[in-house]
Image 1 (cartoon, rainbow, N blue to C red):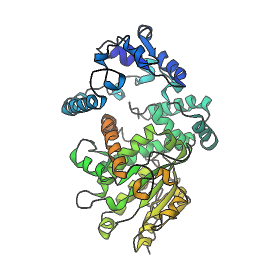
Image 2 (cartoon, rainbow, N blue to C red):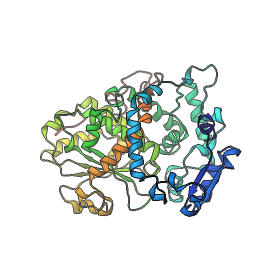
Image 3 (cartoon, one colour):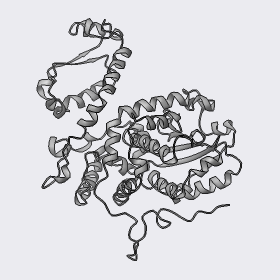
Image 4 (tube, rainbow, N blue to C red):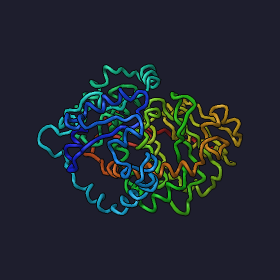
Amino acid sequence: MTSVIEAFPIRTKGIHFINPSSGFDALFKLFHGFLSKKIQERIKVHDSFEALHQVVPKKYLPEEYGGSGGRLHDIIEDWRKTLVANRAFFAEDAKYRNDERKRLGKPKNASTLFGVEGMFNIRPISPQLKEVARQQLNEDESQVDSHLKVIRSWLIELDLQSSLVDDQFLVAFLRGCKFSLEKVKKKILLFYQIRSELPQIIQNRDPLDSDVLRIIRMGVGVPLPKTEKPTDPKLFIIRVGCFDVNHCTFADIMKVGTMINDILMRDDDQMVICGMALIIDLKGVTANHLMHFEIDLLRKVAVLNQDASPLRMQGIHILHPPSGAQTVLNIFNGLLSEKNQHKRIYSHGSDQKSLYQHFSPSILPKEYGGNLESIDTLAKQWEAKLIDNRSYLLDMALSNLHPCPSPNSVSKDGSKHRSFGTEGSFRKLDFD
């Protein structure tokens, strides 16, 4: 944080915290330690608006803070319009960066440039999640730093350095592989390998692009924000029938799904640690939908979302299966990894009460008799989140690193086979 402040041409004259909550002291100490001594002396903590008004004139503050400077909603909207109006500038500005892979000697990263090492680069998690990580994922806080150093050294050896591969990114893979270093290496290689083979899904993913926005607004795949317990798997609902075959392809739908997963993998500690459960709603699915599901593409997408992802599947719940659904389910089951085939797959028919035996209505959206907002509202929230993370999503699309050996490219007898063929990650599919 010190480096960001010192590299910015606008001087920081003061930082004001208002209404500190319980637990503020611990976070403040962490935040405070990253600042230069000069900035530390300019920090003020205020326990009321009245105290804030003594140092910041009301005319500069929004109405919500007792000021006369306008409403926050209007201020945010003005800035949104300003940012959108400068979209071309941001896109051009994003092109100017260092390619540290070309630097002679050891590539530079945040740790070597700024001395920020160890657990400071990893977001703190709740005591409940710590316990789950310890018991179920073999996470030992005292060993995380050494594991990260091993993975980083390995990435350097393979020339797979990237500014996006930070400690938070790597710890997601460590947790997804239960801290098995060999499994982490295989999964990271597969992560980049399969993404390089799916340009129709990974590229052209600008959330401000009108075609991408149209798909986001369909709300085909939407993560649900709540769980009953803080250690329950997070829910992800997929409404296959909302896939409008007249306006997009299956690859387009998966593009948006992958954009959402990229954000979840980086930001949602509960999903990374506790896994996810899928609710797949087949209401409205027709033969036209099935005609768009190319088997070769489905196979690679299955690898992308299972073997190459640190997000672990904890259950699959199917709603409204259409007539002839057994064929669809056979295809779907054949695409699951061997591990996920052993997870419980539940078919609830059209009975929402059956679904409620697993998930309380309090964590389900209105369309499913729940107490949450509608899926359209949740989709709009994710639209805003994807736009907020536009730079990260575009950078992820550009992070096709140097070609790397596929983890499945050489068998034990030394013979080579296709990375994503019937060997390795896929088995022969049985159709009824």
